[in-house]
Length: 322
Ligand code: AMP
Ligand code: MG
Image (cartoon, rainbow, N blue to C red; front, side, top):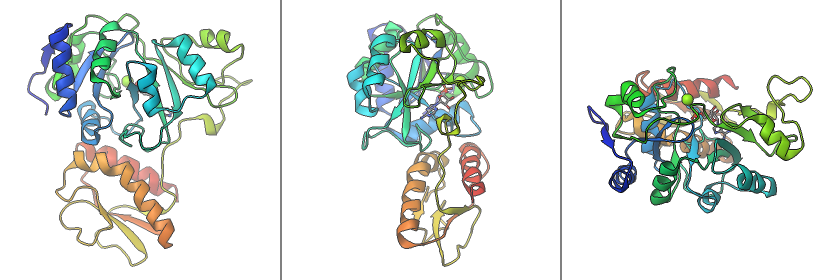
């Protein structure tokens, strides 16, 4: 849906109405938060989430943070235990993203979490963002609104400068106050782990918990591998670029020449559709391979252009896990 120039929406009821309407149609709207501008899409709409990755030109699928207006909405998507609830009560709204288990059948696109069983969620403090999210009513997936590899946008002009022709609209709420990304915390580990430092100082969380957080660079409280964001990979061996699969394989197709494929990422060779199906189809085909005792998932060739680069990046990682 991207236009040659994005609509510039004003920070009022008319602007919010328009932004919500674009999200409901599966479009991309950049919006201000107290940290940086986010590039938002409906987190339950797979092709819309795929369009985020395409607009940013990300070479891979990093999981995205979902933004919601209130705790009740957050609980439709993420499972809160007692600690998560206390952290939310103290630090939300604010620049803290919590990594929590996903509510089963929440409707969240698996592309949001890049196939992981956890989701990063936060309630931003910016009043305009909260009004916008409140009116939308659901979860908005939003990474920073800058092309991959460039610095984050803290004004609408930065957003237009970087992503101008690739998004539908930007809601202009002026300059962001903090200008730093959110702090990312994984509360379920022992001790809770700081996955990314950001706008909320780790010391504030530690004062609240009366405990040191695990950190990447802390020799006394290091992160264990299980606390790091691991990538999703199927358990069955995966092979790429297979044009005609062997008998013992299930075949994940792409394009019209894959008659007989177990599943087809996009029969019409649409990379947005393929990206939005990638993680759910990998989960399904992996389960089916295990159930049928098939030792191999064969994947049809995916063009190395646009979103194909990110799709192939993920498939390569999965293939290397053998
Ligand atoms: P950005 O979208 O650019 O703000 O970056 C989001 C950050 O959150 C990335 O560093 C991700 O690796 C991290 N993240 C998001 N979801 C998860 C998750 N489920 N588990 C671990 N890390 C996550
Ligand atoms: Mg970023």
